[in-house]
Length: 315
Image 1 (cartoon, rainbow, N blue to C red):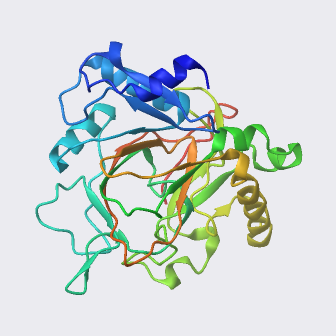
Image 2 (cartoon, rainbow, N blue to C red; image 1 turned 180 degrees about the vertical axis):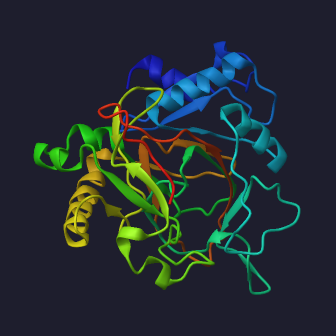
C-alpha cells in the first residue's frame, strides 16, 4: 500500500456537507468501497449525494462507518436516491413506531415474538425486491446491533460474472427472461399468504419476469440478473433444461473471485446496487444479537439494450 493510501486510511475527516472532504477507498476486490466524510443523519448538499451515488455506480456497494441515525433520518437519506418501498406485509409483527419504509432484520426474540425478518437463518444468494415489475435499485442497511463476529454480508459482481461467462452459456441466455418468484423469502420459506400450491407449476409462478442479462441504466454495462438461488425459471426452456441452466449460472456467478465480503461494525450503513450484484448472508449464532434497519429504493423496469423490446413485466 502506498504512503498516500496509508494516510487516507488513517485520517478520518469529520463528516461534512461538502464533497471536497469525501474520500472513496476501494476494497481492492471485485466490488466494494468505503466512503468517508458523509454524515447520513444530516441534510446533504446535491454534490455530496452525487459523490455517494457515483461511488455506488462505480463500486456497486459502499459503506459508511460510525453513523448515528434514527429511522426517520435513514428514510430521509434514502430518499436522496429515489422513492422508497413501503413494507406492508412482513413475516413478523412490525412495531407501530417504525416508518412504513423501514424493515427490521433481526435474530432477536422478545417474549417469543420475532423482532425482524430472517431471524438467525441463512439468507442464500439473491437480489432484493426483484419479484416486482420495478425492482429495487439500491438497498440501505443500518447496523444497530452487531455481534463481535458472524453475520457478514457477501456480494458477488454480476458485471464480472457476465463478462467471464463462457460463450456457450452466453448464447443460451441472451434474449431470455426469467421468473423472479414472489412466493419465496430470502431464506427459502414460502412467503405468506402464498402456499406451495401457488408455485406447483414453475413456469407460471407469481412474480416479476426480467431479462436474464440486463443493461445497467447508469453505467451502461451488462450484468447477469437472477432472483434467488434455488428458485426461478428461464423461458423458453423446459423446467429440466431451465434447472440445469440456472445451476450452471449460479455456480459461475458465485465464484470466489467475484465476491467481496463486508465485515460489520455497529453504526455501519451499507448501500448496494441490486442492478449489479447478488448478495448472501450465512446463518447466525442465535445467542449473538444482530439487528439491522433496512430500506430499499425503487428502481426502473429492467431492460437489455441487446433487444430493447425485451422488458420486464409482472405476472
